[in-house]
Image (cartoon, rainbow, N blue to C red; front, side, top):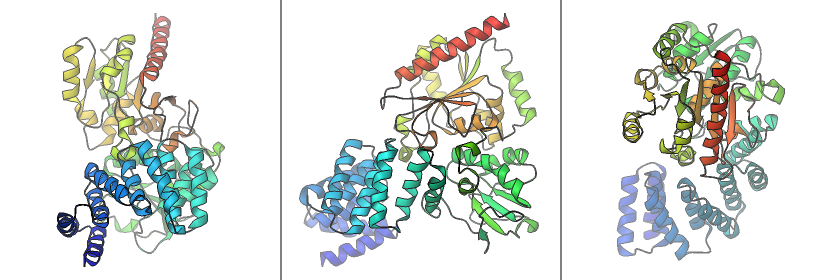
Length: 467
């Protein structure tokens, strides 16, 4: 009877009926707290409910009860991944590979281990594992997608984009059909709808290929995050821009509903960025000149460098714990460079700044909330354009700087995102963005000191030239 009930709980979990599923699991665990299958399904429920520490403990107990079973190690490894317990996750994934008895199981275990390596910036090792995974299960879209990430990180653009596009329609990338139009393949002379995807930084970065699409189409309609509507309409005046990307029911002008084909912004890579030489690195977004003038007037009385600073980025799933500094960690920078530091955090940092300034009242750091805590990214873009330079972690403002041609130093962790590649001071997407890379995961001191030295030399030199 328990097996039938637990199968029902598994189905309910898959359907998102977590409370009903947990009622079944809870009843069985009250009768036998060490029921391995109940614990396994319970860990799935807690994982979906985003109660990861509880899910992790339940999954760990499954591996203790059934140490030679694939399913327990697979779930434990996946949840450990999400908690960024890298060493534990790696051991669990390797156990899942060892104890898999079917091709589908081994393919999944190899893919999960490869995903761990991707999160650690070990793209070559990940690529090797994913090719093995696809030999066992050639139809796995997730394996293709992750193989694409590994290839793009290594600048194998042609194969990378082909595999990356397997992710369209997944939890990571929406696949949109407005009517019955075709997926655009670059055919010239058509009316094409292009839609943004993923986070704000991804949408801004991939928009670097929109001018190519406009050149080759009779008409382009852009469906973007509403925060980007004004900025994109000014930057791409011959396109029609709607801020409807997140709307479930889209209303466009009648003249724009007759489209021949559609494609995601990221899908443009497979058409226009198949070689290193195809990346122009040139600015492509145009800020509002009136707003820029306003922010320059606001800042012009500061008789010192005006430097933007963003010290956190990402969400838990994208490894935000490795993409953040505290303001105290930035003291070597603040003390080496006497600047007006402009907060570019996308969340309200006023309390954090106020607390920091109690101990360091001489550090001139200010948040302009009407520019950064806004639903119109035109405000943030104009403020950034009025600055001398920006220093940030791996976050959307780095892509904004590259898109408008503002000089930026972006500090990336050792386990960097694929767009930043494996090495080098620059990336092909932007010429104005300089990359400083962490050598040891979690150790930012040497990077911050290097940024401080760079900016100190630069502004000391500019001061001498001005004098």
